[in-house]
Amino acid sequence: MTGPEHYREAENCANQAARAFDEGGRIDGQDWAALGSIHATLALAAATALRPEYDDTPWLEVTR
Image (cartoon, helix red, strand yellow):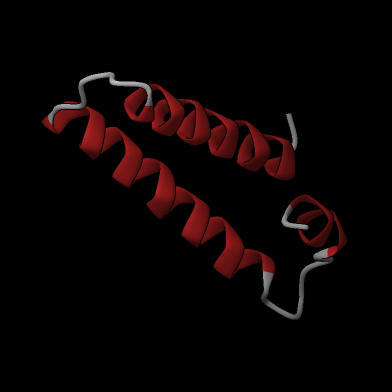
């Protein structure tokens, strides 16, 4: 998997977890920690992609 593909999959997992919670699921501290980790990883990926010395085309496509 490429970086953008990992990003897309992590975003998908976070969305599925949010939907499960919205549908009456229970979320505990471990779930919140996992979601926080996903968001932190996505934030780092986005920050790295914005550096001018990298070809950011694949990242720009995945975030649209």
